[in-house]
Image (cartoon, rainbow, N blue to C red):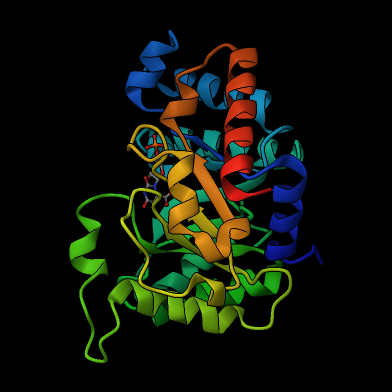
Length: 278
Ligand SMILES: O=C(O)c1cc(=O)[nH]c(=O)n1[C@@H]1O[C@H](COP(=O)(O)O)[C@@H](O)[C@H]1O
């Protein structure tokens, strides 16, 4: 049995530094890299990022949508990307933001968090907006196999606030109720529980005591969406060491030159180390 996700992530952040590099093969980036907007271009793009960064950064996060747009051949590239990145020592968070009624979520759990599945990843992003409890099969499967789940709490996009900051009957915001659920599940785990939260680095504040979460915090929104490493300190004060800053376009624009990608990632790691007090 592999070590639990929280322990593996803690070790990766401590040794490689706090950074998650996204693999987001936008058509505009394929063009900027001189690649065709097809499966061959997708394969070159993802392969280049894995070769350049998988032995360097703590976490790689392929965005499933950019692979799905090419159908089954795109999914085959995603399978190889995940496997190659893991083989080179990076943890892989598959960004697919899955969510449904519980009986269907069971199948998502089998698809992404069961080690025998072709798309098995170290962790999966999931949407709890059919109800936090509807994702129970993901939590249980992650726990069973030493994997993780990142639930969307306060997302980086401006539209998220209308849903996530809406106040429930007991006076808690919807996003805070999600974080409470994750904190309950993570209680007592060391060094970190398996249920992470997604909190955009762009959000103005977090109406929840993050010291109680005891789980990793994926923080996208740096660079292209306007947040800076400096924003992390103010936002995540009590949980700085548990933050996994995530960046995609701001880093990927340095490709396809592998050395330039590596240097940009190293600079990103140093900026985040400083901001997070490592
Ligand atoms: O779950 C995510 O990773 C995610 C959550 C969120 O709140 N905001 C967000 O931007 N993301 C993802 O993070 C990546 C951000 O990309 P850049 O804006 O290019 O750094 C995209 O793949 C988004 O789908």
